[in-house]
Image (cartoon, rainbow over all chains, first blue to last red; front, side):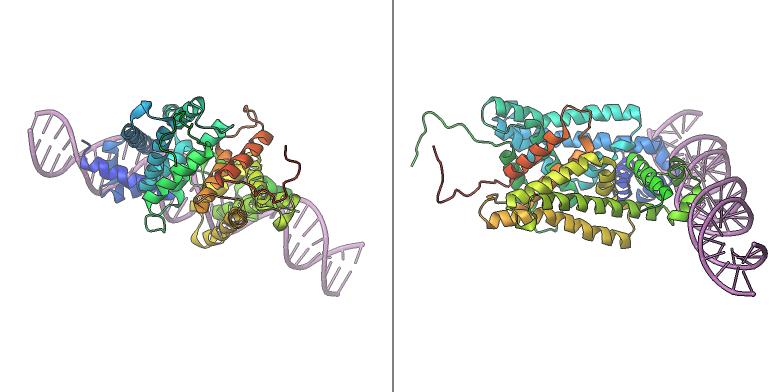
Length: 205
Length: 205
DNA sequence: TCTAGCTTAACGATCGTTCGTGAAGGTTGG
DNA sequence: CCAACCTTCACGAACGATCGTTAAGCTAGA
């Protein structure tokens, strides 16, 4: 369990970074938002960079946890490719919407990381990419996805999900549940999902 | 025609903003990159904000010019919806790739604009959105696009195109021409483009 | 007594901006 | 023709403010 002060600090930094961007954010504002003095912040984090690093790490942890949970819910790695891709798209869309500030920092502030920290972050980002790549390739191998461009389709699906953090609003006309469903459908459309017909088609009209 | 010093200034600011972000960018660095003193910069632009504003305006001008040219090439507003959407997707993809720095500033630095300048920018952004919306709705009306979710499909297409500015590299494995073709195909897949069969199908096998 | 948690005060650096100056060049009035 | 004047473009120096960071010390609980 994290100390309460540390949580307040992370939350304050998240808001400040998301609103102004890392460069324009001031650690004095962050400390004030967290209800503590500037130097108290230094008791928990050794500087502005480490604050960003902690935010990115924590955001990644949460994201992977969300996707893993959704993947397990549909049966894990043994599930059908369409179900796995659907789970990843659903979890990602939901995460971008429910954690917009977190997501925007993850997506936009990569360039503010110092080189050695960027390396670690890039590794985790590659892991996130393969969450989409694996089921798409499995679907193509299984003959259920027919897109001729799996790489570009994957990038398209990821971009569609990520963009949610920038436009979706809880008080908007579209509920999150509806959006998630539509994104799953659109993703399957993009990879040209057409399930193989069973040789013994049962109960046809 | 813009003075040479002004062009050098815009180019320098574009690089600096794209690399570090508006907040972390220093106008001293920008002036140095442009090969002039800090005060000389103030002769052309009244401050950091106006530099950003000029960049965004110039970027928007160029983007609309690119799309308009591509639209005219396929026949303008009278062209078939699929051709119009294809033209917009092609022009946008190409612009994001060929003007990555410009595009990233357009896409990421909106939040650094002061309120009154943001208003103008948002208006132009809405115009850009309707470049995609109009042909998609025309395609649905014409019975050629069958997606049940035109709004989300539009957002997906736009996000796919925009993401190009963040990942495509000229020295990568994928040529720009090939990427443009694939994006057009993927966009038409996403809106579920299925051209109406002619009542008088000619020359069928 | 020790330490975790927090304070105020201050450091040097850099920030965006402003000021005063002046060289160069064209324009105008006599 | 010349002198006065204006505009354009550029410079170095300095402004006050804010930046990230550090130092030294206080306080309460174990």
